Image (cartoon, rainbow, N blue to C red):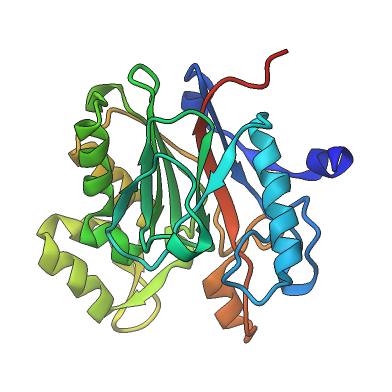
Length: 268
């Protein structure tokens, strides 16, 4: 296990790096044990990968946080605006349908799975409240960011102290959509026009998911935001991508994992 842990490649945020008492990781697809379409750090039980491989991959990913006490917590993601406050790990039978989690409990590693959607990790290092959001376009337009910030505030976070990191997701150059998709956003708020540019052909557009997520964070009062580089669709060596799998005619795809936890690294 120790040698395998070193092979996992995780990306970092300068802002979160400076947050005392916060551990986190945006994992790439490198360093796991899965093969084929899931090569190699596939962390999604919703895939058709061998569950034993997924379980081992999750353990490898969790080890990136540097704490043997951390317990991984995930939701049943369904592109909703549902947000859960987590006080302890739940059993598989009681895993809620949600796309965001908030906690103030040490050593609970809040984790979201993505394969083009934007993982967003949030932390108020002063009040010791953290959040993890799976921000696909459906959840984002439905208000999952706003609801997460609201719950963090209700639990004692100061919005102006919150640090947000938007992880790798599908970038605008790769995210072509139709006019119906664009109109859904513009009808919701005319300002959303700015998150689109014209694509090739009539009725084709490109959507900037990461900029839309950043706008929602800023609108909610978050001042400290970092956006990680990387296009999950274009960079198949580093990231899993649902859209790329469809384009390639593949019948399934892997899921990347992003995590955040409260608590110091293991101490003697």
